[in-house]
Length: 419
Ligand code: ATP
Ligand code: MG
Image 1 (cartoon, protein in one colour):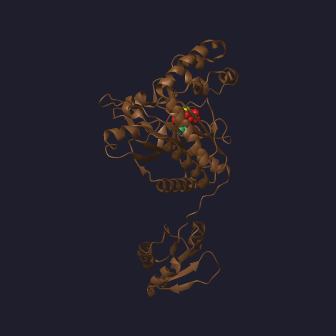
Image 2 (cartoon, helix red, strand yellow; image 1 turned 90 degrees about the horizontal axis):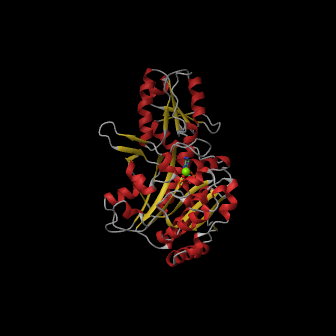
Image 3 (cartoon, protein in one colour; image 1 turned 60 degrees about the vertical axis):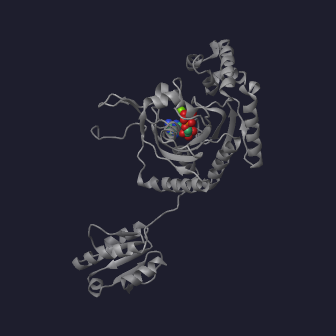
């Protein structure tokens, strides 16, 4: 076995047995996004490393230690497998001047890459569905994003995810808060763990996010940004809360919710479940009003969110959710030279009628073929032997009830199956 090649650690195959769940999820998501008027954007998986360093921020987990970066052997460019989707989306919007005429409601989906320690709900290749609204300044758009995610949980039958929101204020308020936090934590360096000490001067807000039980007391007592919020952010946050209340979306304000990426300001939110252990955040987002300008575009406000597909699917699986099965309509059995030829063209004709057809391949007796037909889950077996081939007909047998086999023309058989 030692010579057998394996997938890269933390990067998963999605096997046929799980594909139906993924397809169900993707179809649900596509319908849901259409219902809100979002259009899809697809960007490359590889981008210039600089894009992520400049947007996500130099002193963040992702840029410090999680990115798959490499040098293009041919021209020496520094490239990175995308660790998230917002930076690429904004880069594409700026590059193609999509905000020229109108604001944009966009979404994306696909694989993201982060070098993390693999565990349940945390992989090195994982998938996100992300939503971005660019050119919208008001809290109505933050509310739309939160209300639409609440609808998605209903569509998926997930009732155990809870919403936490917070505001990071304006860049100035955040700057003042940062200084206050450094001052506060400097008085408590003996209770800080190594990670927190490293972040103390580079990214002190992230200390609030620590899960270390030994630090919870000092974090709890830390100054809160909401006590020194700029007027505009306070109003934005108040209005958002009123809109959520009016829409009957329940939430808690978590003053320690900061998000790991540098580009956020004002609203941040997370949907969290207790079902997945430490990997409980299934969806996270917020406002990033400065990012478009930072990437070189004309300044415009924006907000968005991304959800972790593997974590949502794990929730569905924990609930023993079974996606709708999609078996073929027909399984065609055939035996004999003339029958083999007729079967091939009969299958094509049935597909012309919009039916899904599995044509038996690999020979074998009718008995053996019938076993395969049963196992396929098809509603009907169509049987073509020498007799049928000579008469230019087929035999049809329902695999769902015990009705007799019937000899029909192919056209009549197609009509029966299509009912
Ligand atoms: P976490 O705190 O769990 O590391 P994050 O803040 O790094 O999450 P984001 O960058 O906000 O996560 O990504 C949005 C969502 O993508 C997360 O809420 C989570 O559901 C999912 N996600 C992030 N990293 C991973 C991963 N390594 N494996 C699987 N899903 C992930
Ligand atoms: Mg992370």
